[in-house]
Amino acid sequence: MKHPGWLLELQRQWQAARGRRIAGSSRAFSRSWVKLLEDSGVLTAEDQATAAREAERLEKEGRLVLKRHRYRRYLIEGLSVPLDQEAWLTDLLGIKTAVERQREALVVVGEFASRTHARFPGEWSALCQGLEDRFRSGRSWRPFHWSKPEALRHLLEVLWNLSGRDWETGTPIRAASVEVGLDSKGLERHARTFESGLSRLHGAPVSLKSLGLVAGDSFVELSGPVCLHFPDGSSHDFEGLKHPILSAADLARCTHLTTRAKRLLSIENRKTTFRQFAAANEDGSTLIATTSFPTPALREFLRKLPQNLPHHHFGDTDPAGWQILEKLREASPKPVSAFWMRWRAASGKVPLTPYDQKLLPRLLESALLTDVRGELERIASKGDRGDFEQETLGAPDLTGWPFFKDHS
Image (tube, rainbow, N blue to C red; front, side, top):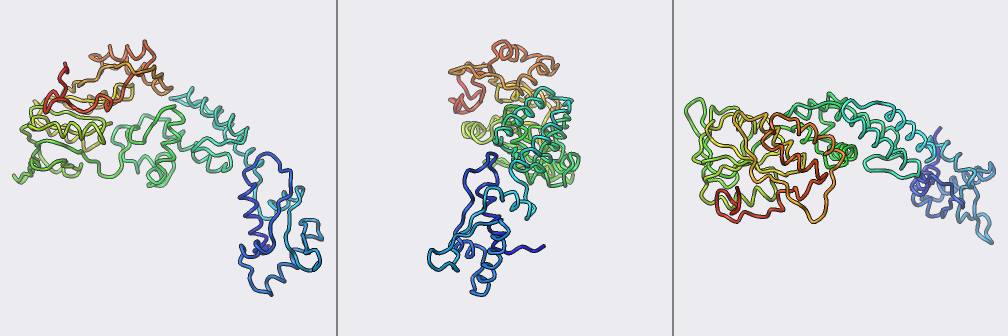
């Protein structure tokens, strides 16, 4: 059944004003009749007369209350929807009330709470309990909203699939998108929403990249001398460039890399620390590369560098930072030493997140981290991440290796 445009506009305005309220209202929903007609595009005298007859018919049925001019009773000045007719308004136009949507959202949360997560059972249970507590009081918890039950179900299902497996580092994000039940661009299109959901689950920032997923043709950003050599005998020297960027495709085409640098230093923080070290690397004796979790481009880069080139890694010293070192050691064909990665006390205790608490026991048992186990044990015994971000060490105080005067 086709409904009058002014009635659809009335419903839209009611939805905007009251559609998300859980508690009932104490006063009828009222609107100016003239303004309502303007908002709904009813502008001609003929259409306004038709709208008036439609409103009067609904008034006789007890659906609306019309406010008329004090003396010219044929003129309508306003209308209101009685409290006991709000359900009629929503039913008439196929709109669910806030209470109905809240009830559906709680059912969805209950369904997911009944599942036992294979990898993070405690975190999943805590997430669902947190959602239930907030939804019952009419609150949302971004990116989760009780007012959109179907969107909530979709988001929880994707998070369940994303967090339920250990993704191989370098997995194309579009392939992963299909595997978790989306179209090929779904994860990229809504990356911020899914990352926000993962962060709620783990109690700490989690990115799709940190899961091992990579978008498009990955690349390595560098500072320092490097030359690519190709099968036809040609080469491309990046000696004169400030920050050359090598793509996975170009690295795959070349046979090997050469460099006059004496060492490779990979740095986790790209925006600040990498640029500070690049500026301090005046003699070019260090080839500096940005990396967090190793991408296909970085793996190819490490494989084609001279195997006698020492590799040092400078990263954060929270559990996630040590996990990156572990993944680098898995990916590199040669040893990777930790550079300036030592636990430092912060001005106050920095408690471990639930994600840290889940990750730390595995790192302590990792055969790839035996040489830094003392640092991990210090974090575990103190229950404190400390001053873990590499940026807080500040800029290098030497113009070249080892960059810090008291480095050992």
